[in-house]
Amino acid sequence: MAVAAFGAVAIVGLLASYSVLLSGPSGRQQEHEVSEDVPSAIDDLDGVDFSLVQLGYEYSGRERVASAKAHTKVRRLDVAEAIERVNVPGFEADFNVEAWLRDTQVLPFNLWLWIPMLTCWSLTVVHEFYVKAGGFPLLGKKYAKESVAIQWVSVVTQVLHFTSITLTLPLTLDFAIACGVHVAWSALALPLTFPLAFVVLGKYLQDSDWNQPLARWLLIWTNIGGAFIFIGWSLFLNYATSFSIEGRLWVWLGQQAWFQVIGFVSGLAIFPLMGIQNLACPVQDKTYWMLIANMGRNFGMIAGPAAFCIIQWLLRKPSEPELNPISNMGWMFMTQALMRSILALMNSLVYANSLTPSVLEAIPEHQVQAAEEQSRVAQQLLNTVHEQLAMDHLEPEARKNVLRKILYFLAERDTTAAAVEVSTLMILEMCFHWDASMTGLGFAGTALGGCVFAALTAVFLRPEWAAWSLSP
Image (cartoon, rainbow, N blue to C red):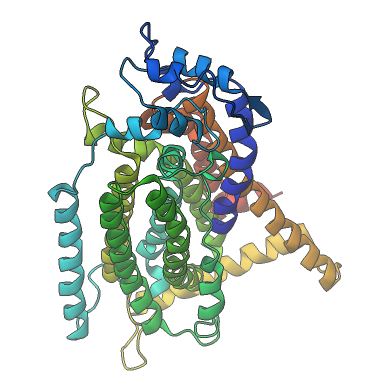
């Protein structure tokens, strides 16, 4: 589903950006003051015979000069700079990228990010030495089916994972413009290697032969590794703010390749988490935790743009110059590095090297009784549901078709949600002239209600409620 959410941005970017751009001038274009004293350098272009085709419209040289006169800041321009305005791909030709970037600021990464990350790394390393010396994870349980923490860590991971996917969406448009990329491609972020990691790990981590020590190692150290990958690219982005427009274009292309690296590493962290969550979840609670996890994914899709807005508010005051979009993208990736560091620490504290007690350990009587009671309740519930659904009369191929349609629906839902999110952010910024730092609230506020109702649905589908509703 994460791949579907990523893929939606490429489709909607191509459709939404054209309709948005054809609707009128952008917010950034209207920030330019109208000049009463137009520089003579622009007048020199009146006789130049040039034209270009952008978004289905042909602009002659005189029409381009007239547009430039109406939207130019009061300052002297030479002919080369005026021509530079014409060559901004997919954007109004009188918008000067270099002049816009010169008015932005580049922020170095400060201790407010480094201290939490260093703290998480230190605690993780100390705790791993403790476990290596024979200790048991501080928040873990020897019998995994009794561990509610495993289920909640799975939900929190889903929230942070989908938050990281959508955290940069409000910034992708400005980032693409700064890199000289057509706005139709601005939201493209497709880590094709994410499912490849699932294929690779499927050969080593199977339900019938689950390697829990390997799974625990992946849960901790792939998140630490992912944090370092995010940090390295973030530092490079801050450095890349000094590049020319051609250099920044290569930065954008390089980021698409970088997405493949971080996508594969993320897949290595998500696969064992989903496997352990399924193995450790009691049968009677599977539906409940499945709905809670789905709510976490939905909340993450909403929380990303909202978190972006909050971070922008923390980074600069309204009176200060806006952040360079390339540096701003680096800050968002540093935030994701902090998320990965937190996940590594949580996984270290919660997950043990075994899902069940060792045969050499005596299982407490209350655990045996609890397991028997869970098994009895689960069997009763399964019998009741089986009688209600009565699926045995269906052929195996019909059951596969049912599952296939469910998967299609889930993929379509995530794709549609991501498409609506991208187009909403672009419309708010380009048609209604919202500041990029505020666009996240526009989407998050409208979609928050869905998470509330998803949580209520999960509560009412608990086994005790389900048994009550199915009783005669």
